[in-house]
Length: 214
Image (tube, rainbow, N blue to C red; front, side, top):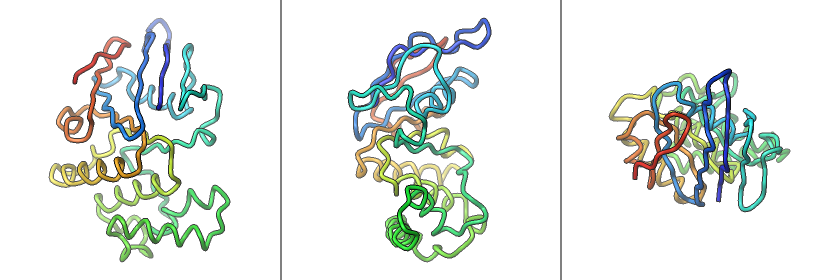
């Protein structure tokens, strides 16, 4: 269970987030919608530990993790631009998180190879990421996020750079992988169609507070 409790964030004279609380169960995808500039990405960064709240706390499975740095939270954050490493091939991009966790490189690559197989990307393992299509790059980004078995997944407009047909197919694929991994997932999007396709529940961030949509 991922929980935000009474989060408040002030920017100058403007209260961007006001006494905001949210719970996300294991395996649940909650969509966070709202207009540009309303604070969606800021809230996501707070969950990840990249941005401090002025007040309030972040909890996971009953433990207050507000003061924990991002690397200790065990969360995976995916941005809309994929954030893949252009100097690494596909296999080493996916293995990167395991290597950072001090797993021997050979073992990390073995696990990365198996993960790529799950995503239908085994044949692309030795390619440079910049040679892949947008959809393939996004699959690599998700494989890299999932391989470390994160406790929660944070998605920031993950499909906005893709064409409509590819967005639809990847939504279904992501939902299936997330359900199989059993992760609490927060999906930031401005697209209500995308939210309905992926999430079991949605909230709108407006005037600093959350309003349930469904």
